[in-house]
Length: 117
Length: 236
Image (tube, rainbow over all chains, first blue to last red; front, side):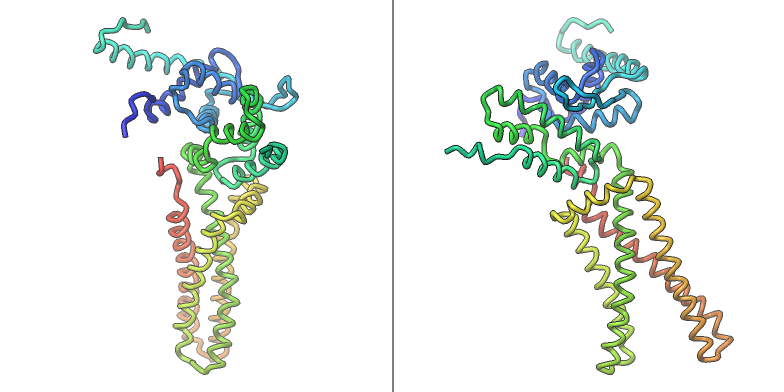
């Protein structure tokens, strides 16, 4: 059944990569904090199960786009922190351009102001 | 009704960790990371007025089913899934071979006892395939039950490389043992019956038959295991 109010599952999955790269471009972070940010930014409209995040992080790390490290947090418990690598920064810029191109293409049809890439 | 005091967070988290560990696509480190996520989520949820138990269940639900998380991991790492399968295939082949050696002795004994003589070959064939089916079924059941979870945990004691070496080693060992036994049988038979011309043919047939059996067995097991435990990503 078509649910018009939620963002389609495929689109959520496709956007997970640029989303994570962009969040990490803001600075180093860990899984739970990343999910919280996505929740805030999308007002809950991006239906992620929290567990979906980790396979994506794992894949990005395998591609060498992000680096990780286990470290103790203030609470004393250990967490796995992620940050962008040099390649990750380049990938972030490339992904951003691609998404903006898609955005501008649709935007022309919808008579929106184009975003400069 | 106050059921809150009965809920033990440590036990609940431990049980959940076991469920994660049962998924072969999730490594121990990934399970540990998911656990830190769950524990990170609890204070926020409790601040919103949930009890510890409610917070635990909601955090768990938000993370998704262990099978679904594992399927997502497996999509990015089909190699690991295959290594896992090869491990079970080799283990199954080894179990069947040792089991059948015992079974053959038993069949021979029973056949002698009731004096069936010639039909013993048919019996052996039936038992051979019954053995394959039984072990494949047992492996399938194990992989779905709680005992399977325990075995999955045990399997993770090996690092991936050691496990692969172990699998390959077992397959090679089983095949060479089978061939050696066939060779030895043929030599003994021809020596006993003084048929020097038949020796070469006897040996060749024997080795060929053993090699074929050793080849057929893992293939049959592979078909069983791949069909019964497919990459779960197909579901989504």
